[in-house]
Amino acid sequence: MNPEVREAVSDALGYWEPRRVAYNVVLAVIVLVYFALNWPQSRGSVSVEGVLFVFILAVLANICYCAAYLGDVFVQISGFRRAWQRWRFILFLVGMIFAAIITRWFAIAFFASPRPG
Image (cartoon, rainbow, N blue to C red; front, top):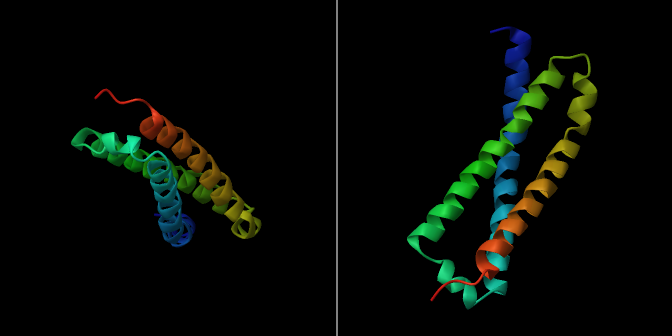
C-alpha cells in the first residue's frame, strides 16, 4: 500500500473511531427518550422482533457512519489535507445531525404508532 494512503487511512481511523462512541450514544439517547415519552404505549414494542428491528437499525446507522471514511481518505490524499484536518469536524456534526433526525423519525414511528393488542 502506498505510504501516503496508509497514513491517510491511519489518520482517518484515529479520528473517526473515537467519535463513533459519541455518535452511538446520541442515537441511543434519542431512542430511549422517545421510548420514555411514549410510555406505557412503547412497552408494546419490547419484543424479540422489536429488539431485533432496533438492532438492525443500529447496525445500519454504523454502516452509514463508515461512509465518512471514503470522503476523509479521499480528501487527505489530495492537496487539501491540512485544511481538511482542521475542518472535518463539520462533516461529523452534519452527519450526526442527519443521523439524529432519521433516528428521531424512526423512534417516533416505532414507539408512537398504535400496536395491535
